Length: 297
Ligand SMILES: [Zn+2]
Image 1 (cartoon, rainbow, N blue to C red):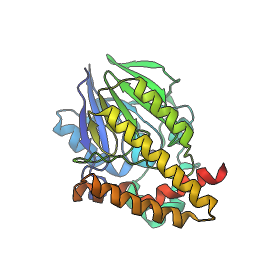
Image 2: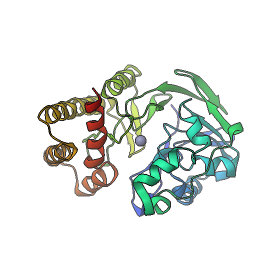
Image 3: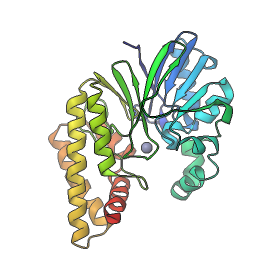
Image 4: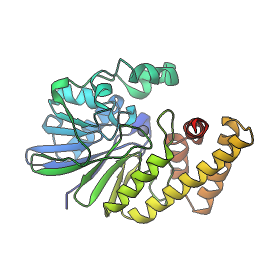
């Protein structure tokens, strides 16, 4: 069973909202998720606290290219010479973030782009390693299996490490002290059918731990994945009904927010966790991605 440590990247001053996972290997360590470029300083502090030196980073396994997950991969690759593992569809964005990834993020974040995400840099092509679905790779003695898991993003990979799986965003969002699981559904890639197939795949792996970037390790995978799928199905049903009634995205956002407030209360989500759900996985953003998906059908 691999030894896995959760690193709090203290994103934008907020604790326990974005994680990176450190796994020791023969001559150093590897990371599942780099976090954003803005968190590299916090990442280095955490790595040092765990008794490692950032220069001994052997590899970064990116679940997908969204800036909160892999925005810092280029900075880390240039500094340490590490390999960055990625889905083939994600690799061009990691190599050349200035082409599409950053311009589309700038349209959303505007003046907050650099404060939030830092100076995102490209991963040198020679250090990028594309994987195939179900490919097993070994880094310095550690075996990791890639599982393509679309639904949240077309270029999403879940990484299996022994009995644990780093689920990126396809395994949902959940914070400490809560059982509540939310599907983050930003535009443009959301595909509910693909997402459900990815959840079926995760169940078949029978993991004993899920490693959620947002946030941490959870040891009740079956219940967790069931709740996530149930919420995906119900939210999609609500979206279809609202669309059929001629409702707009705002109507969907209001309906989902009202429902989710009730369900968070009912499941006893602690107040600090409730604030983290709203900050990291705003229902307004998810309703935009879900609305887009349902209106294309
Ligand atoms: Zn994402």
